[in-house]
Image 1 (tube, rainbow, N blue to C red):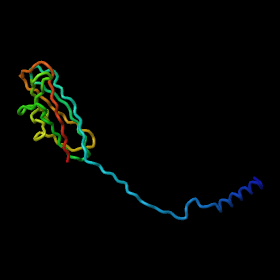
Image 2 (image 1 turned 90 degrees about the vertical axis):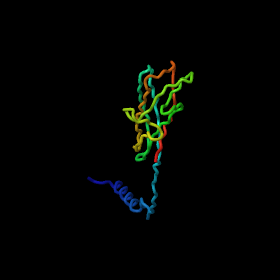
Image 3 (image 1 turned 135 degrees about the horizontal axis):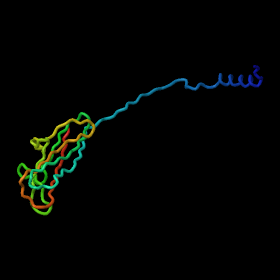
Length: 163
């Protein structure tokens, strides 16, 4: 196969151009470094659900709900429950919506309902995982209470102390 004079001329010009073209890289280089940092803070958040006993008929009534604690991975925490607004002695009380009548109840941190969950000796302890952890609250209304017909309620504050 014969290569034309025109093709040889173009090829020679391209080779000459490439031989004298500036280099694609600079004659030298410089470098620098920078640090990448982050800080994982010690933090917890908490959410709580309503505990509803339903209709109280004079018999012992049990109920359960959950409290969700989300703490930084490895962070130790303690969860306490307040006594509510209407504490009377050792029992928490719900107040009737239209009178000064009360219905006693208690909150526990175990299914056997033997350990009262409060802000002092009955706290629940745990270690954060970085994901929400559900803790069960066990409630009980004792039997044989004489209560007026109507709605009763109380408000419990959940406190998460973390170290």
